[in-house]
Image (cartoon, rainbow, N blue to C red; front, side, top):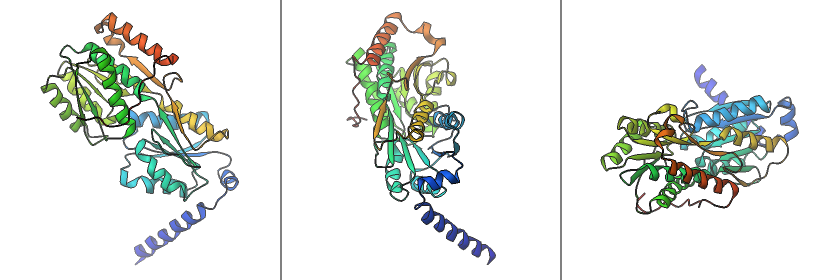
Length: 338
């Protein structure tokens, strides 16, 4: 009986917080927070994945340090739990709630109507409202360069690419990789697979092995933590690969030629700074290589394996992207055969 009463009381208190929080003004919240902005982060995987989610966590720690924010985070959030996670943080008077990934766009729009005084930031989404903004990285730019490198290094004329769950922010990388590869070799055999998971390394291993069995000799990915499985399979097979989100050369140092590095910490700091400085706009804001948010980096240990003409080709294209003389197509539509 005591347990039942405790549960009922908890429900009443939660309901009270939900109702009360929705009506608090910005000034009341600021006073309650002692002037510190409360920032929460939601991610789909582990914050130590050496990739996508870890980069967001480092961004959270950066705003804690540089912007004197009070922070919290929740990892391994499934799609079905995103709305409730957002609601919980908003109900507990967090001023800013960040969803790291395109999947958080719709949940942010839904919850934002209930908590107009909370700002919702979505990374790589296409959501915007009065209190919702999306900060998008031009990941297709590094995808294009990675594809050029893969095609330049492939002896078989076959390259593969592995993604996690279909979404515009990931499809654009997969398509950019293909476009870059086909600039180097228009007839290249481009094989792709979606694992359906951001964290299951076994699924990425299976997809990579299937590609290798089909003749692929360079493999790329944008599969978050799951992608490390593909990198390991490539290394075990004595083949090359490209990393994503983070400098992943240490994960498979004999295989990873280069990585697409997304400076998510700086992106998150920019978003929170916009709020602190009163510059927040409910919009979709794009930042890429020219702004230093997206970067193409080599594995220094394998530089000697890359032919000089391939390096020069990549340097030329990278400079063209940065100075605006070449614009990488941002194709977010899934192509046939993928």
